Length: 222
Image (cartoon, rainbow, N blue to C red; front, top):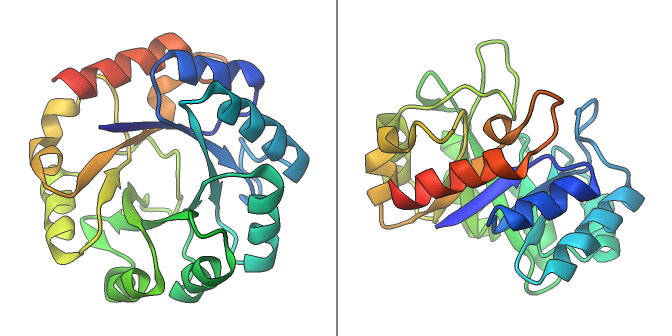
């Protein structure tokens, strides 16, 4: 099972996630006002550190639809994966697929609010445009996206998985104590893994290896 921790901003966080057994580390770029937003130069530095580990893969997490800027960032930072976490249209996926590196992985986030997928009518278009996988996450009542710490329901996730055709990751308020709450999603044949942010952070707001390790262990063994 893939385990991803998102929103690293320091070298210590990246190395800590590698030590905790993470597979992926999310690096924010093109998230205006985001607390973990990185400049292009900083993105490249942290991505290089992750790649040097040999096991940890960096993921560019973005709200941007500017494919030219995204392709430039992918090339400069040599990231193998882009996570489109906003409401980017299928055309953004298509442009990245056509002009990006052949091995570039494209993850499109699908947002659920009160069990309803806000991109429901576009899921087939994302698939045809070349997305490799979906990531299912929460939208809060006031419209906040990402790092909300608000969980989804297992029923809503599994129902959406049945209506789509790609492998998927699960996000939204996941922690070491709620792995058993998502038995249906975890048993789904296209379930890939989890994406965690808040539960891996210490009181200072930084990702901590000990907390991340606890989450990874719980989800891989429960």
